[in-house]
Length: 254
Image (cartoon, rainbow, N blue to C red):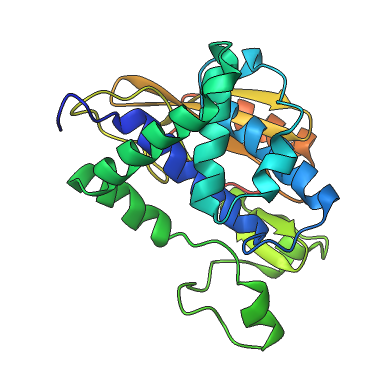
């Protein structure tokens, strides 16, 4: 890739874009309370993808209102990442310029083999059914049936870690494995899916932040789901498996 292309920033924008698709808020139709939730969770997820997630700054006070004015998940993702970068650098007045730079970089990276590889992976792990498709009783053709078990929906049985899900209204999305993020350089391999070895597990409220090692580098990911299992139970199981491959951990029962 050329020296003017920043794969790390583009990957972060892409991950946040696909995360925002879970909320099915575009075209605009969400309530003010919905936008507050979307802004808070997107801000947390963005920093959870960084090794410095514990030091995330406070969310900008107008972020929810600004996201409500965006036209798509990509537009919103670019705005969140630009706001975060300039909040950290204490230059919030430059958000518009930074957003333009991020979008141009995103387009350039998506035109490369590395960018396409990441997008293909995310397309193969789609977000929940669109509200309109579900209301009409038709499945979204982009979504493939996931390996969800009956016990995932609270009938009292055990739940495999690979089957934990996040519910948002009537939509259901697989939570495992997390989307991995970190610092990338030219030629670096991107951790995807169940690659890597579990290095650390940290609790943040009702979520878990997992750190893995892949190709000699650390990657972090936010694990957010709807109980069961409880956060205490899943935290305990994962901590006991530090040092094991992520692929093997997904088959464990909680």
